[in-house]
Amino acid sequence: MTACSTQVVELRGVGKSFAGTPVLADIDFAVERSEVVCVIGPSGSGKSTLLRCINLLEQPDQGTVAVLDQELTDPDCDIDSARRRIGMVFQQFNLFPLHTALENCALAPRTVLGMNRREARERARAELDRVGLGDQIASYPAHLSGGQQQRVAIARALAMAPELMLFDEPTSALDPELVGDVLASIRQLAVAGMTLIIVTHEMAFAREIADRVIFMDGGRIVESGPPEAVIDAPRQSRTQTFLQRITDRAPSPG
Image (cartoon, rainbow, N blue to C red; front, top):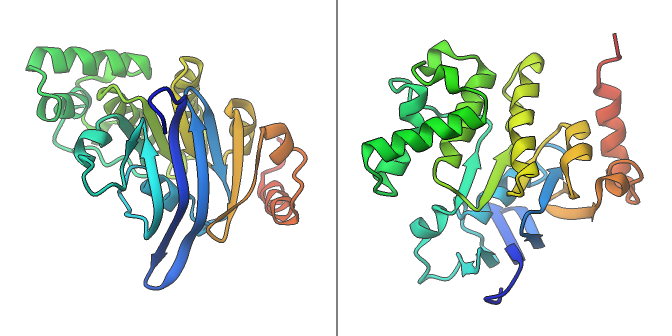
């Protein structure tokens, strides 16, 4: 990336193996500022590993990863400092059970960013309001639904004021009736212009929100393009087969 680059993420030749089994192979991938990219594909296709390589939760075996003009794979990179600009929301909520929603969101701004207690709590309250949970700031995770816990997890990530948000199947652990509020919170971020990379099985959501959809299989990017091309009119036979299976598994209306 150059100093004036509009790219937020750039991966070049990224590969990753686990116990000798390739999980990612020769990934070239870039995301522009304010772009929303949805990554789809079957289980085991490398989607989650791709996200984890972007913030170096997984160290690639080959290639380079640059985020916000920093090469994270450079041995001299301050990875902890770089990660402060990247928010990530996982499948599981991973909230601290003995802390309230407000405390869960205020903890990192205090301990990582050095905010005082009042500033951190004000920021946490604002982000909980943003995801529609301003009335739950004193609630503990055990007293929240799965969808509410996931929205607290989103607010917690946003409290660090990231410039890039990564979502790893954020609705996969939720009952179907709880999915909508979480997706609405993510949709608000897209409308606000935040750069988002979302691994998802929610095809209708991907079609609606994405500027670009990437289909992965076997650790490779098989197809990439606007949702009306990749989801509605895929060119590759593997993409067609995957989407047909997704459609066949979808419940019938009514």
